[in-house]
Amino acid sequence: MKTSMRTISQIHDAFDRRELSPIEFTRGFLARAQASKLNAYLTLFADRAMAQARHAQEILDREGVTPRQRHPLLGIPLALKDNLALQGQRTTCGSKMLADYKPPYSATVVRRLEAAGAVILGKTNLDEFGMGGSNENSAFGPVIHPTHSDRVAGGSSGGSAAAVAADLAWAALGSDTGGSVRQPAAFCGILGLKPTYGKISRSGLVAFASSLDTVGILARSPQDAELLLSVCSGGDELDATSLPEAPYAPDESGTPFEWSGLRLGVASDISESDLDPEVARAVRLFQERLCGLGASRVVLDFPHASQAVAVYYLIAMAEASSNLSRFDGVRFGSRAPEAESASDLKGFYQKVRSQFGSEVKRRILLGTFALSSGYRDAFFRRAAQVRRLIARDFDSAWSRADVLVLPVAPEPAFRLGERNSDPLKMYLADRFTVPANLAGLPALSIPCGTTSEGLPIGVQLIAPAGREDLLLSIARALETPEAE
Amino acid sequence: MSEGRIAALAELARLELTAEESARFSGQIEAVLSAFQSLAQVSVEGVEPLYHPGHSEMVLREDSPRDSDSERLEVGAFRVPPVL
Picture 1 (tube, chains in turn brown, blue):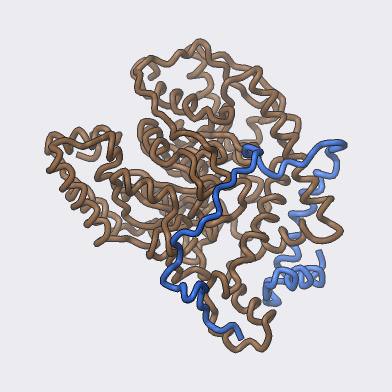
Picture 2: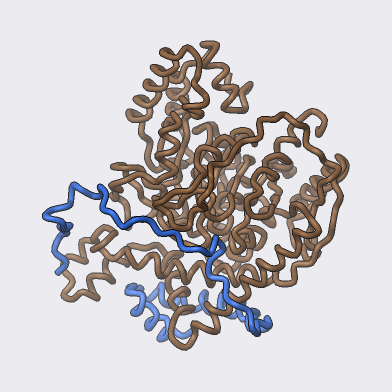
């Protein structure tokens, strides 16, 4: 049953033919999630999810067929990264600081999913506050790769990616600040969409770096990614940075994709020797495949690309140090028992904030440094200036290319524990994903093969702002028989 | 970066570090900052900083009250546990 279906539309067809019921569908996911050893979920909502599934069943029974316009996600079991607020349910951000935090409201995206009929199975594991690329920075233990138990699932949305890849959720939401949806999607062999900045409301997404954070989608098929984007997107008065526009409209025209007009940009400074050889080969074959279909290839210079990691981390850490000041035990954050006996306010704050994990502390320190008196201009302001230069490099690229093709990560999923002691090496591995966040552009990670060991490899497409349709059209067209 | 400098930053950020953390962070932060030194080579003369990639116009709505954390709301104020 499950192997034959790839899209939500096919599930709804099966609902309509009574070959599958929303109740049994959700029950199957919950059973697999409960038996799973991947540590993908931090919280499962068995009763709540079954109640939602029963409600979906009632709607289906009453209507006779799935009301796809009104409830485009009817009976579809989804997972949420645990930095998205769900009213009254534990929302931990992978941190001891929020181990028992229950938000008083749901994120706008979560409300939209539930209004569309989705079943929320649970909340998925992540690097603490989204800070990491391996999920090893979670206070609740790492996520295990779905097919290689000695490997990481990637991060920071590792739980969401593993859950979808291991069939513990049909699709999932994550968040992408510097690659946190695209990289785990690539490591686990699924699609990961990071939309244009502001396309999906951030209201109810716990802030890490506000000028870079986006809610993203982890899906099995481009059709599902489109459908989820159409439900999640659209302006939101609760997020002043959300784009005041109508929700994304999926392309239902059925018009075949025109490969011959497509100009594929590749960056001149990415050398194959800089990549794992199997990743390099898979990305090259992907480009050749598109060119074989009729696309043309353009080599482009990105003069400031080599600065992207430094710019990204200085800005992300500065914003994080500011955003995370709210975890002080008064506004947010659980009070460590030692805090209760502190003799002054500073001691109280320090005891509360000692609950942060190492990576979060390291980033707060670096961010505090980048914003501190005497260093702000040389670090934070200069990083923001170079950020503009990086954005301009993209602007010039769009006159010669429609879409850029590059790796997601320089290598496939690495071994658990292998990188823990070398944060700089971890940061540098983000070099292909952070530029899209700095410039606010949409980007899609697409599976493009596996290594000889069977580890998935992903390739990344980046498009101009607002052109999710182009990314998803390409991904859809690649699945048609003509593109095989 | 010296452990003394790390201690000063930790105090600004209201973080309490163990001796082990302080020693470890000192080396790691030094390595990260020296890798980021390359930024200093980029010519940024006259370049406006980009602090935000979104649309630039400010979106304001009516400042009207609405339901929020009403369980904890008492006489128009939130009750919180004592701090000290």
